[in-house]
Length: 163
Image 1 (spheres, one colour):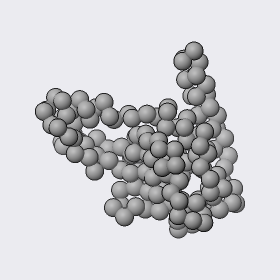
Image 2: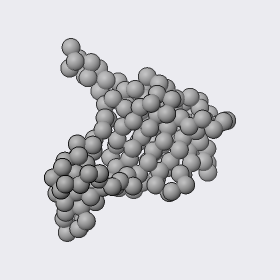
Image 3: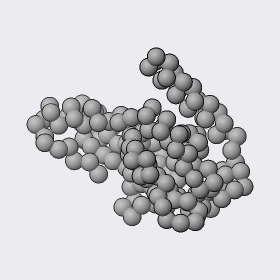
């Protein structure tokens, strides 16, 4: 039964991705226009490590996306001598949901809008789609939590410092 539910969730996410490909997206300063409709605002956070997504009118945060970093010696390579692991934490304040997603090679507003918000049908016409946000946060989960906890246990660190 649980496998059927997960399969259905993944299928819904796949359909949402296909539907998002046909949406015309324009970003004008902080305003995001989807198919000619002003849909939401995306603002850089004050630390420069993420984004806040708000409705066109008003200041109620629909979702936040923050850049986080931790170091894992298991990821030491010549191209990554510090073992740096980067990811985004996505929060939906109205749902009290949180999840983690991969950090893109080229972080930008366009990536957040295209590959996170629109591809997953999270926001339309200044409103968070709560059911899609539930699916998004459930399917993504806390990708890096186990890795952070493992590093903390292995190296005797009480708390792994994240940005």
